[in-house]
Length: 449
Image (cartoon, rainbow, N blue to C red; front, side):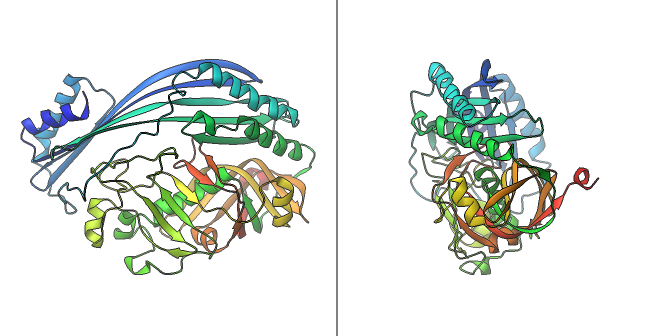
C-alpha cells in the first residue's frame, strides 16, 4: 500500500488524524576483498510509518510489510488500544506552516550503474595500491529511494533520490595496520574514486614505516572527516535538539540563543534541504518544508532543530526536522564550514605541530549526554605527530572528553570539506579535517597491560 491508501483506510476507521510515510528503497552492493570484487547483491526494502490520533491520544507504528492485510491488522490493533492510552501531554494538531514543494535528487545513471561501479572500485583499489597498500576491501553501495507522504488534510506528496557510498579499507603486511576512508553522494559524477583510494593508501604508507606506542594526556588532535562528522553530528543532534532542550537532556535553554557556545571559527549547519546531500529531503513527517538550519554560526548558538511539538513549546516555527518520526526532531546532514588549512598530509601535520591524528573512530559511548561526557575508540590510522612529522603509530587509544572541548577548543579546519558516511556515523556529513586543542586521549585496557 502507498501512503495515501493507508490514510484513507485509517480515516475510514474513525481516527481523527492520520499521517503515513512510505519509503521504498532499491539498492545494490558490490563487496570487494583482496583487491577483487567478490559479491554483487541487490535488495528492495519497504517501510511504512503511521501516526494516528483520537482526541488527544496518539499512537504510532512502523512496519516493513506493506501488504494490505498487514496494514489493516496494525490499524485494528491501534483502534483497540488507543482509547486506553493517556492523553499525550505534548499533543499538537497536525498543521502545515504554508505551501510545500517537493524536489527530486535523482541521477538516472545510478540505477543501471553495475559496469561503472566495477570500474570505480578498480580505480580506488589501483590508486590505493599505487601508494603502497597490499590489500584492499570494502563495499560500494548505491540505489534509489522513493517516498510517498499523505495525511488527513489531503496533502499527498512524492519524491525520490539516488545515493551512493564507497568505503575502502587498505591493509599492509602487518595485520594490526589498516587505513579507512568513505565518501557518499547523490550523483555518480560526485565520486572521486581515485582520490579516495590514493588518500587511504597514502595514510597507510605513512603508518607502516613507524614504530608503535600508546599515550595518554591532553593533545592537539586532528580529526579526519569520519571522526569530525561522527562526533559533531552527535553534538548537534543531542544538545541542539529542541526535544532534549525541553526535557533537560541538553544543558542549553532558549535563553542561550545568540549566546557564545563555541570557538569563533566553528559553524555547524543542518543541510536538511540541500538536494545534493545524502539524507536531505524536501518535506518532513509532519508535511512541513524542510530547511537548512544554522545551528552554530562563528561560535554563536543560532537555532535548535524543531518539529511541530517542540516548536509549539518554544513559541517558534518548526524547522521541518520531524525527520524520522513525530516525537523528536533530528538532523539529516551535518555541515561543518571549512577553514583555511590545506588538506594534504604534510600541510596538516605541519599545522598540527605536535599532537595526534585520528583517521576514524567507532563505538562511541556516553557517561552523561547532558554533560557531554563521551568516549570513543580511535581506529585505523592513528598517529603521534612531533614537530610536524609522524613519529609513532598509536594503538589502543580513545578520545575520552566532553562536548565542550570539541566546541570551545576548535582551532581550524581544512579548506575542502568531504561528503562522507559509513555505518557508525549518526548521519551523513559534509566535513573537513578538524583541528581541536587539548583533547583528552586515554589508553584502552588492553594498551595498559
